[in-house]
Amino acid sequence: MATVLVERYGGVVQQAYTIVPAVAAELPAASLAALMAQAGVEVHRDLPVDAAGGNNPTVFFPEVVGADEAWAQGYDGSGIVVAVVDSGITRNYKWARENTIARYDALDDGPSKEDAYGHGTYLTSIIGSRETDQNGWTSVAPGVQFVDVRVLDETGSGTYADIVEGLDWILANHETLNIRIVNMSLVGVVDRPYFANIINQAVERLWSEGVLVIAAAGNGGVTDISDGNTPMTISVPGNDPFVITVGAFTDNFTPADTSDDYITPFSGAGPTEMGFVKPDVVAPGAHMIAEMQNNSPWAKSGSAEHIKGHWWQSAGTSAATA
Image (cartoon, rainbow, N blue to C red):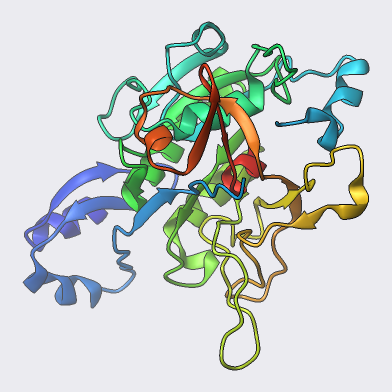
């Protein structure tokens, strides 16, 4: 039905979705008002979505989140498959090649290419790299496997259509690949109530199928505005109550002492536009050390600090989400 309507008004369908009853399409501007007037039709702009980038307020310690205690009990992520919806996962590192069991590229409609930005690889390294540096830097769940769903380009940017296409592919393949978790360390524009947002509708469909979605709170921070309240800086899909939204805290460079921990100034803050308390949890998100390609655009952007070799330090709710 959606395809028929789009074509009737001179548009071209670019992508039809299963995860939501919608299509991505281009339409002549002159036809838009008439299409929107049709009963049962809702139009969503193809808004931008970006990696929940890096802040460098400038060692990543799994002990801070109790990962070492889980390891001692035999839990290291083995048997869990995480879909990383981001800029891709590099093939440069042995652990990334061996641990990535499937790839999809929503930008080119096929197997995901090399991570052309660096953000996705950095996050994946935090989640489940099997490499340990001589200083003890390692990941939280080295036994986990990955599905690479590339939705962000070489600038760390994508669109609503890209994100929904990636989630649509996950829906179609989650049972075959045993995808249990979706990591979304990205931020989209809040353009309407959470339940009417098309990315959130796709996320909720995954939730209804038993897939856990974890999203970044965003790096909008907390800033006073004229009426004395704080702005609602939680982004899409983190503003959806059906996802686990993650903010960032810092251990203040004292991982053994929790008394001086605090929420980072950049961590997105609620309430959401519908009054939900967010984020749901906070995790370490400052001075996080992980692996990334040295020549990647994100490494060169100033959002990350080079430590040595292919180890980089950055900060943000994207890292906390991972």
